[in-house]
Image (cartoon, rainbow, N blue to C red; front, top):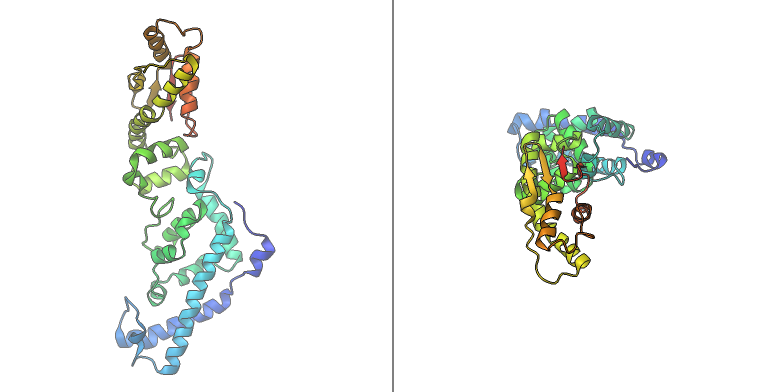
Length: 321
């Protein structure tokens, strides 16, 4: 994780003592002068305080509200600072040895130095504060575009929501991407499988959030991977063949005939594909078009998908977890 220079970060330090004082004054007015007269508040409007607080007390209360709003803005700046130039959630999900809890702990230590301890954050996102700032935790994330930053911000807010019991859905991968497996499964299952979401700590957390088991994810990913290869790789192989052999007529090679799906494996029988091509062309190109050639063409045309675990048996390419 790359962060701003330590001295710069300290200069931006949050005044937690002033915040505590403002928060206590704010809650005192709320509990002793607002609640006894109008009860618990769910939605705040400026006119709500008319006849409840005198003009002087109303002015003080609004200044305290602004202090809390400003504190939230400073928290946004600090979050962005401690995760400066961090990678996307997918980059974190591709790392088998990643540790989300340790990453969050590291971020919290830096935020502690800036004054945003968990105790401070508990006050900052107190339900009463959220009402009077008209900004729930979900709204706070949305307004400040914190769901569009990076993977470290995603996991930090996700864990903060749990620790403070804020009862908010914080999408891992960011809002709009969190439900992508349902909204755009043909692409997202293939991409997330290639990154290894089913076997890395970050990836498993996202699958858990989506209530998708590892077994179900892999099974579905293989189905979409087969469709993706047929749609995207077949044409590339044919182009490579025509370039190599100078064949001008259409070649009727149906790649789907050479793809097998097992419970936990996805297999491309490239040696059989080569044999059938050579039979189809009367072995005219067998000196140049070998099983190895087909294997390399398949892999080259699949290079856009990264991180796949592929085994080569000499006759088959086997994808497994």
